[in-house]
Image (tube, rainbow, N blue to C red; front, side, top):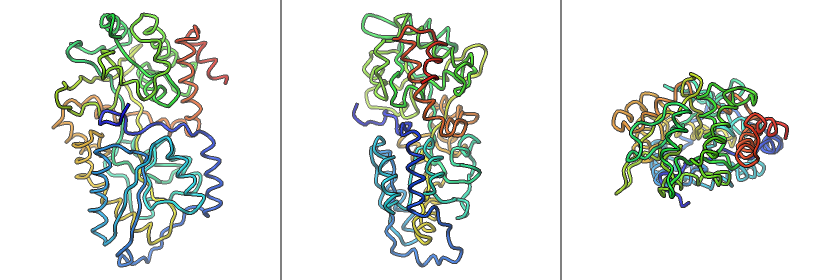
Length: 409
């Protein structure tokens, strides 16, 4: 799938425990995070040439991000060059840079990776520069914290929602049973009722979390009824003929099935609500629920961090970051790229102008932060959940048996 506004802007890292180990080595090489000096003269920022790295190589975000950073840097007499790298290569690049004292001045990292980078000592405490969370949901704020220290701040966040073709679906399903029934009704010879990801590249586990949580489950407890119910739902959809068994090989490209008309429903992020010329805007709804639970989503973000470089550059980066996180910048990114603003008031303002994103913005407060809840265990859990889908769908195991087998590996 070629990059487009409807492609997911970040991917859940699959680097796993090796990241933590490598970062501990990195901190030994780099000497850990250095605190800023209180007597830095802002005049020292004049002429500084700073760099910013991210794993978000998507337009129009890249161009807009560079414009906003440049405007912020100009206020202190500095310049910033933003560099975006493929997400699959980004973690390795950061590790190599940390080991060779080649870290950028600003680093945007997946929220699920922040604990490992913080543990490794390559990030600095943002509160030491006077930066602080402002108008954030508790789950958003928690994504930037590690061991009680603020290492990251998000400018936008991401949650999922059910996406459906409004020409085929009058009212979206509100429960698992309704989802099964509607998916079956929508299935034809050349169209499945729904498409969901089932491979192990991170997409399957992230979007599965919404079903687990909306069934009252605990993603870290493979014996919880809600976790079992979510896996059973996937198994049932394939058994009903409403979802292709090939879903076990679909990663982040699973949304191609919906975009090509091969599926009537799917799950997606807010970027999918961006209008495209000649195409109708899809409908979006909260995840269906089971057993009387409330619809709840997992949340992720790209966290802005300041690596340990030298005190003057760190202080300059902090000034630029404070400007980049401003409400008007967050609103502009939402309007251009359809990323949910981290600031709640900005998100509400955006939703008022674009009602189609309500299913996303309404899910931010109370969302589940998998990195914060599971810490480094999230990497193992993510792989195990994807494996459980596969064991249930093609391995002919019950949902409970599939989860038990996945947990044992």
